[in-house]
Image 1 (tube, each protein chain N blue to C red):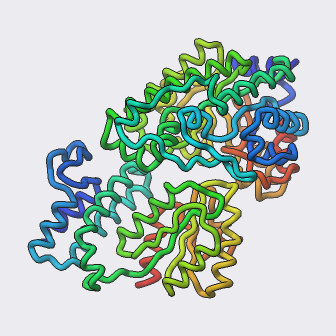
Image 2: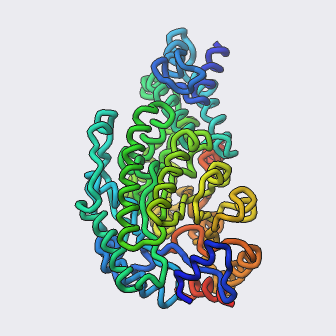
Image 3: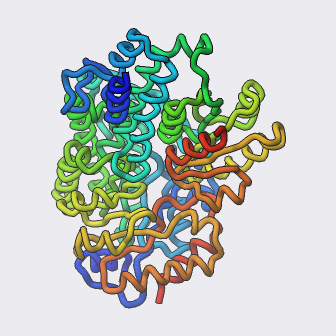
Length: 222
Length: 333
C-alpha cells in the first residue's frame, strides 16, 4: 500500500489528474491521482492514510517547489486539480467523520478586489494540507468574514489582495474581525503585502507564498 | 528642447545633462489628482487626458500615457464592463469557455467598439493638446493577459498545460486585435505603445517561450513597422524571463521592484531602456526624503545607461503628492 501512496503523491506533485489528462507529457497515457486514489480505497486503505501519506505529501512537495520558484502558477493549478479530483473519493469519509480535518480556514479576497488567483492558490494548498476551506470568493467585506467566523468557531481567516489600491481595505477587515470575535487568527497575503504591513494592521501572520500559510496553520494546530 | 526630443535622444543613447527621464504609471492616482473618479477616468478619454495633463504639469512628467485598465479589448470582444466610481473597472463575464467559443470569437473593429475607440480618441486629443512635444504612450493588452481576460485566469493557465490548440487559436486572435489596436493608436498620434502582459510573471520560462515569446516579438515588430516604439510591462518578478525577452527588440522594458536592475542590465544589454523600479509601496508609505534618497541611489547606479525613473508598478491612489514629487526632484540635476 505504501507504494500506492507514493504514486498518489507523485501524481499530485506533478499534476497528473487522471488517465485522460495529457499533462504532464511524460505521464501521458498513465493513470492519475483520480484512479490511484480509488484503487487505494477499493483495496481497503485507510482514507486518512490516503490523505496524509499520499495527497498531502504531493501538495507539500509542489508547495515547496513553488516557494522556491522551481515551478510557477500553472503547475500548481494542475497539482491542485489532481488533488481536488482525488479528494472526491474521500468525500464520503469526511462526511461520515472517518477522516477528520485539521481545522477550518476561511478565505476571501478583500472588498474592492476581484482577483482570485492568489486566493485560489492558497485555498488549494491549505485544502491539500488537510484543512476544510471555506472560500468566500472575491470582493468580500468585513460582515461576510465575520458571519463565516461565527459559523466556524475557532477557524483561521485568510485575507488576499492583489492590488496596492485594495490592500488598504485589509486593515479595516482585520480590525472588524478582531473586534467582533477576539482571538481570531488572521493571515494576510498578496503581491503588495509585506511583513511591515502585517505589523501595521495587527494581522497575525504574513506569508509571501502559499506554503508559508500552510506551515503556519499546521504549526498552529500541532 | 521638447520632451519628445529628450526621449528620442535617450533612444539613440544620448543622455540629457539636466535630468533623468521620469515616467511613473498613473491611473487612479491621476484621476484623483485631476479631481475625477477612477470610473470617469477609465470611461471617458477627455477626463483621462485632462487628468494626465494636470499630473504631467504638476510633477513635470516626461511622458504621458493612455493606460487605464485591462478591459478595453475585452469589451471590444464582447464582454460587459462596468465602472465603479473608485475602483478598477469590473469585467466578471468569461466569454470564452471552450474551443468552440474561441473559434466563434470575432476580432473586433477597434474603431467601432466604444472602449477601444475611446482610447484612440484619447491619443488624438493628447496630440491636439501637446502638438507632439511630449511622447504619448498608447496601451494594448498582451496576448496572454488578454486571453486570461477572455477565458479566466485560472482556466487559461491550466489550458497552457493541457490544450495547445485552445491556447494557440485564442492567443492568435488576441495578437491580431493587439496589432490592430496598436496601429490605430500610432496613427492617432502615439509615439510609444505599451504592451501590458502582467500574468507572464506567473508562468515559467518554458511556457513563456512556447506560447508568448514569439507573439510578443510579432507585436513588437509590427509596432516598429508602424513607426512606434514599444514599452513592455509585466508586473511582478520577471528575472526568469529576461533571457527570452533579451532575444527580441523591445525598446523600453518596465521592471517591477522585485527585479534587480543590475542583473537585468547584464541580461538585456545596453540598448534596452530599462524603466523602474522603486517599490510603489515604498513611494506610498515612506517619507519624501527616503523616496528621494532611494531614487537618487538608483539614478546614480544607472548613470550612463538607458534608463527612465519610475516606480515598479502603478503609483497608488493614496500616495502623497510630495512623495511622487520627491522622485521628480531626485531626477532633475
